[in-house]
Length: 101
Image (cartoon, rainbow, N blue to C red; front, top):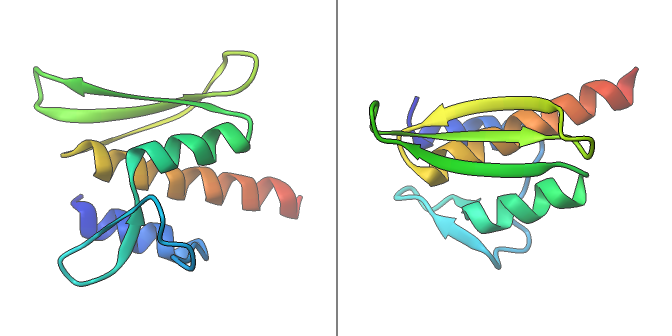
């Protein structure tokens, strides 16, 4: 996938870096939220995000659960930042879809 794809997906949800506090910078200059910032965004939306390194596959898994502890989604990435950013894009898409219903 790559961090480029994760950032593209996040920006496609309408996310902007107007407040770049708590953001990293990609080589191309685009800002993206750090894993800690992503965790706070999940908390504000009522979810708990966990990031863990899967040593067997040398990747990171981002998994989120709702307030009741039920699994709500999961993604993988090469780095913790990539997994976190892609997870946030998926959460934002899910919230947009449920809001439109």
